Image (cartoon, rainbow, N blue to C red; front, top):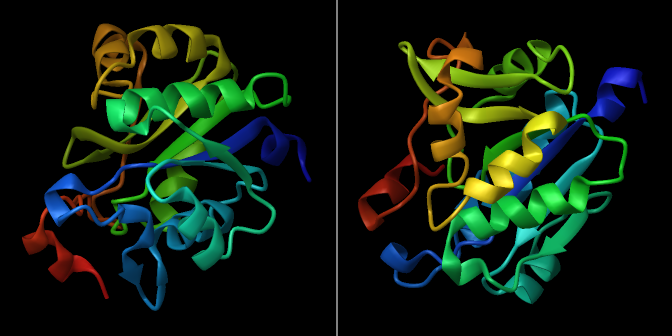
Length: 199
């Protein structure tokens, strides 16, 4: 593992219950023959993240059983119903003390985000104070890289389904935007209609 591989950890937020999908957890939706959570881990690994933490919540036992997540650190979020903010806090907390200097955060319900896009965001890492975000036609999206110097602040402001949004808005001037619109599509799998994006 190179220094950069050890310093930048992948973090998949995969705890949601898929309320608008009839209660089907997004982690278990099938994409290219495998559960979405497995796809997300593969994208982070292909982009160079040797260490990957995965936050689970809804039907976590079934996710563990059905998805090939060997080598990942699996983090249970008992408060997953409170929204993505609780999962982000749980994920960042799990990275504390591991030697990671940054978390590269990928949402499980964005399978259109490619390994190339993640690698571009990862390549913009400089140090613990880094804040990097993918952009699509200039508009900030995912994935997002959070340097460790920001973790406490992000965790303090991560409530409901907002994740790091409030913190990033407050630190807009410090964010390095990396255009990824040519190599990725930033759609979410939120509703029945969105399932058409899955292969």
